[in-house]
Length: 254
Ligand SMILES: [Zn+2]
Image (cartoon, rainbow, N blue to C red; front, side, top):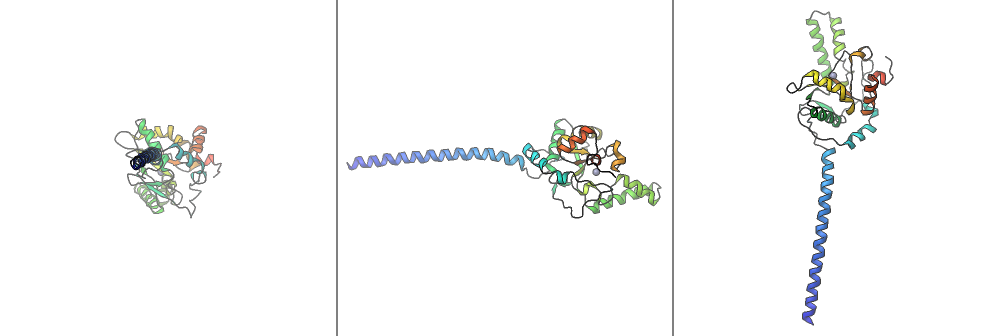
């Protein structure tokens, strides 16, 4: 009887071990699946802010883009031009690009997505100017005025000419952080290829050609085929389809 009891005890002990082993295996499989699913999601929506705009690439999930598109109208449609200065309490949360330029972190996913799409089409753009401080904008203005003076313009003429090319500090979209000057990388693409691609495709990613040649009187800025500004996919698509500049789209009369 004693032997028999020991045998039974040992047997039930082995069964218990089997059950525990199975539970551990199931838990491990569930854990692995969870990691795969969530791990991939995490990589897609929260890439390290690396800023491969200009050099590398990563994927931005459509969920992230959609999320940005629904609660973005208050900031993505802000009108800044020579008649509308940036609000004094405006603050910027920046992300640094791989080449040292910075942009508002809210436009970064769309910007990266647009660059990835361009590269997939064999076009190689580069952000040559993103966010600017008021001081930087002032020094650009001073340089431009000096250049016109060197060409023989009077002080007032030089200032007037410069202001058609460089925004008066406080009125530059670059100070918002949601505008970028995009040129070619200078190796695989040239400027006209990049400008053409951007003009045809940027709206799909929420960017608009901010100063088209046909709208200079309304925007107050000369044709700048390199200056793109984020407005959100919905607004950018409407402006692209109806050939409207931002001032027209917002119904502003200057
Ligand atoms: Zn610009």
